[in-house]
Image (tube, rainbow, N blue to C red):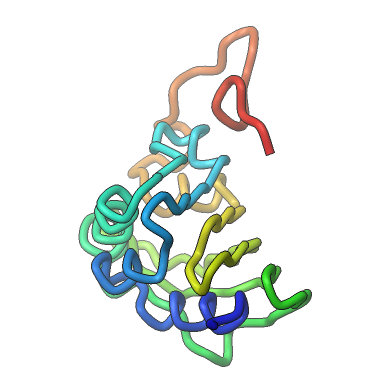
Length: 155
């Protein structure tokens, strides 16, 4: 049975190929990047089809050539069925041509040799600076109540 660390390393090697990535997830597996909500990007992707579409979107639309090198992956906690790691990518945003050195932190939960949940965190300010012509100035004006994650989010 494939453990969490192996699944994470296999996933990061497959990014951004949506089909290859999705095969590592359980049928009802979930990919969450809760803070993408603040950029207006959907933050929860459940099921292999949705997960494949997300990775294809990242690698095809946002950051062509997006990927992770083994030397930029640091596993910090490994319990067999869960792993927590940091991983860095150097990617160029398609919309602006800006190079971003993007650090992700992810917690992966494995069940029956597949990814049940991968929850990732990233610096959304840096993402906005890379993706938008005017950086964070292109984001919607703040309202009286600001949600950094989707309303009703549960960990």
